[in-house]
Image (tube, rainbow, N blue to C red; front, side):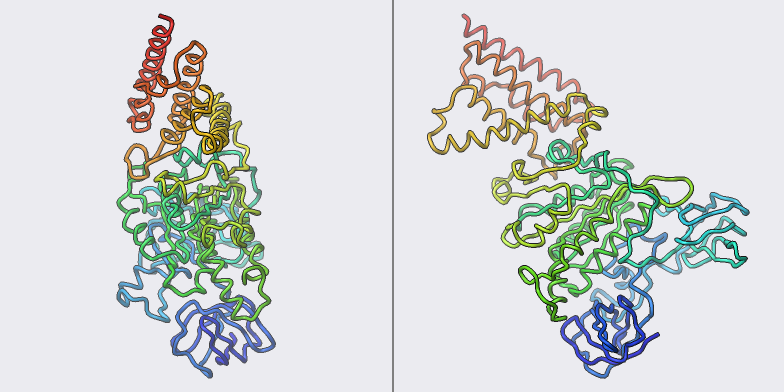
Length: 587
């Protein structure tokens, strides 16, 4: 254990001397107040430390002590439903101990040491086990069962194991290694946050992560184990999109990282999530959520740690065989923290002052997502999907963080301030967004064989609308032919009746894939039937004013048990109204 003294203090950066025996990324305790920090640079016996707490009042000569271990998280029962700060300190426990204001140097364990959990073994004495094998379970909440796994690089034979109530530090099993030595297995294990947890094999991302958001699932789907970026200017709805995905995405566990965003947004999450009912179980959404709050008024250096803490917790649940969705809001604030620390270290700045290693750090984070076969003999499959919000200044995505992110991720949901201004939410621009995951086969096989055909037609109509809009702006609507005007009407219907989705409406907030397909069919049916009527001499004006269009628009609010009947009724109504127009024309 290395001990030294403070030589220099520059904001969150502290330089200590006498640290020759310390290692890179060791956690250190700074000053008599025992502030927590991490070594990020070493020159001779001088160590540069980024301190994760407020450093005002520190001065040269104060003691610095290395713990000799890297920044690690505690993984075990008690994670679900908790809210941690950027270095996995439990904020609720700290509030109970010290009051509502976060005091410096507080040392409280991440997982409660006095809570007892009921452990049920799933293997017997004498069983040979290896790293990743499940030896028992703990029901953490009504929704989540924690699977207690053998820690990494440990294998041998179980010598004792029994059911009972244990704290996270109690021994639940004793394992004997090949050399005769024994290892005590507890409910909790530790893992360094900067190292990705190991797995057996990475699988191809060929299944979608169903989110219930129509513009995402239909036009720009993300795969289970995939990575997506949500860049957009202020007020375009990044946070609401992430809240929607956290609520409705087809994930067993949600890890939500509020990294450098406004504190009141985190407060919204805290107030909203316990009230929300999980659609699959009817229980509170907090019963499958882990929250990490490192808001804009909290220490800058801890933003970087919060991203790694969040993804390590997510990997732990992935290793149990769960599908995990990780929301990082936002990676721009994390990059700003990197820029500040880089500046204080006097490193050579890259583009716009960001450090030269910005792109590689972003890649290290996103590459930890994926669909994998976990360690252990049972070959269970888990998935970790990462969705990062990016907040480019002024909405300019040509800046370094957006560009570095776009080179890594395969899904780009481009939020548009103009759409948000027109109250079109989610404000995802269908002309500039994209998804590079090839999920068409899955949709055709599991929803409807015509899914991709309908999706292609919708994209063509939206692209044609953009071209026709340019003509209308130049020469006016009267210059368009009747079929082109019908295209504009069909595209308007796609935008308003299909892509526009109300996050606060009890029915419209989530749409399953079957209903999404029926909605696509209705809009395209209107277009096809009207196109046929045009060729028979019906005027475009009368087709635009069809009464059935109101029913098509309101179909998204149809209750689940009435969808099939309402769909048939609207199709019938549409056919009757158009047939009447054709007869009128012929007469």
